[in-house]
Length: 293
Image (cartoon, rainbow, N blue to C red; front, side, top):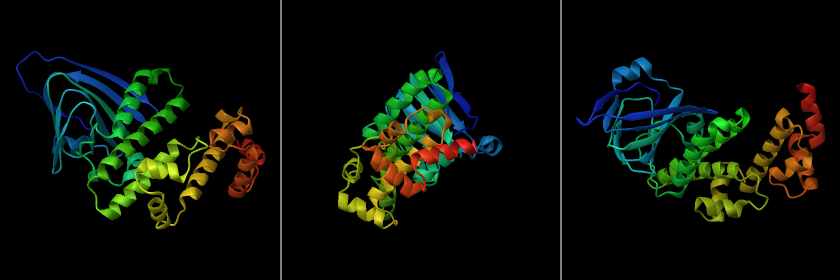
């Protein structure tokens, strides 16, 4: 939520606070620690300063917070996260509060999960494994982000957003209707695929186990959307390979290295599938990309 807020102290004790700012790829990050206070994005502030192209993700590091947006009120404890849209909202922080605030592109999150209003203000609990993974990754990314090259920072920030999306999806699955639950499960599966394309042993059985459904049910959900699970995984591997072969930053990599990094255990298998997908051999594709650039 990239909206100025009205701040109000909640005690007469001396106030203390600290802010640290960073930009890592597509993510704007603020690490804050402060005494107890209330922060409110009023309707007037939202009208004047609301930015519809981003949403706010708040990772609680220490202390307790109470969040209200629209008709939802929730509490966050250490390890929890919450998403806030660009709408009026209020948060109350206990003394000793520490928080990592991320401003991320709305499109990146809503492509995975649908409109932010479906999950804004909902506590995404630390009891979920995906939340613990997202919090740990993003906290460490904030610490080392200044040491990353721009292209690496872009990739790492994209992984961070995917982890946030997976956390929200897992939380939504606890309370959604079956049709929406299945849509969220498929999106979780797609997110998981992106994170494991380089594993040659990764396939539909491992994916089904990761998202908590039977292989048969996962196949049915993909079929209902006109896809086959295995075909989807191979398509994503081949698209990533095409991106690497057409990218200047990967121009030094041997084709075999590209193949193995995209989950192929054999360069011959990679070449056959790549030509079937792209109409060119990997070598021809790389040469054509060089001519275009």
